[in-house]
Image (cartoon, rainbow, N blue to C red):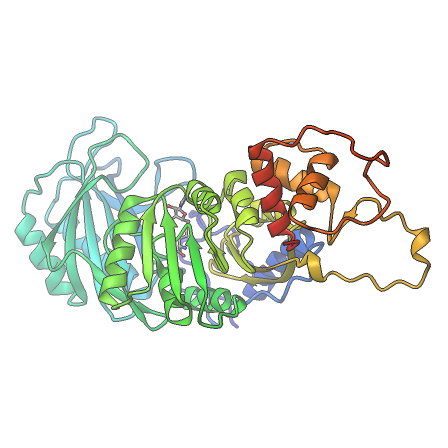
Length: 472
Ligand code: SAH
């Protein structure tokens, strides 16, 4: 493909891979992932874009006055609030580029007051535009004060020159902050949201909704994750870190039940709306820390068949991962936007899960970011067979108990319950639950020795380990 030259390349530092051929960008991302992850299993070929330009469906422009008091708009230079004027961004939806330029001209012509963050005075701070594949555009005017002088004229002009704008929202942000949006939004024109169509469903996008910025690749990403999970139709699926429920709702028709969990309350509200507008009945969304929720499910011994997890860049945490191990679903699909934390979390899980597939998807051409989908399948210790051709007497089998070693059981109990149990505790529990002990190992040879039995807490933990290793 012929590389286009970005008109802002000289001064905008936004795209890390500026000037690098797209094929070369993919090669570099693949190499980085191979280096980090191929020790788990071979990394499949990254799925790139046919056309890597103009993929962003959400763009925000910052407004300011230049030294001659002309109104300018553009991106911030990385790590600063200095504005790089942008006329046309090569990774943004072309219509968004056009709408943003048109609004900049209108704002200048009408002399709309611009916010000055040094003195915290004035009006317009940012303009955010979001697009959908139904050719609906939403414009968000982020202001530092509630009152927009010439508001009606401004709205009229925006609509006159940009008929594809279906809603205009005002968002008020009075804080001294780098966050673009404030807490309060209300529609000035239209419904205050737009609707995107993805994976056969409708998703409502409001100004602050989290929604993937590259629709074409998101569809591929979600389909890859759902295919990997190989649903049969009767599964209980957890969509962890679910945002507005997009993955779980896309999978809902393929499973018995979806349980979505997400920390951000407005995303959960959107997930419930999305569920409703799509008439999906077999999903529930909960606003909660994902680790805490998983811990609760593990305590209640809820049966879970599959988990799709899509944590933020920081990855997951041990609370979540330990509970995942305890819940022991057959399949876990890990969708990651940060291969470094992905590697850390896979290392944590690899004792309990086999890593079967690693599939990168390039969601963000021209930037260094990449998404990776990983399939993990439960290691079924009970069916682990050893085909060896030497006498058993030569093997030291003393550590084994029907498929799991004492050490593995101890480690499992330590990791999940933070309890230390002895081999004797395990042996006693085996006896209690009628699990046959290999002869001649671990037991005291003396008859009728009295040993203290283990506490109820330890019993429960060991019992859980037996279940986890399919021993009962
Ligand atoms: N799966 C969604 C969102 C992924 S982004 C999608 O594809 O659109 C990661 C999400 O994790 C964000 O919505 C963020 O709010 C949420 N999150 C971050 N920390 C969390 C936690 N501790 N518990 C639950 N959700 C969390």
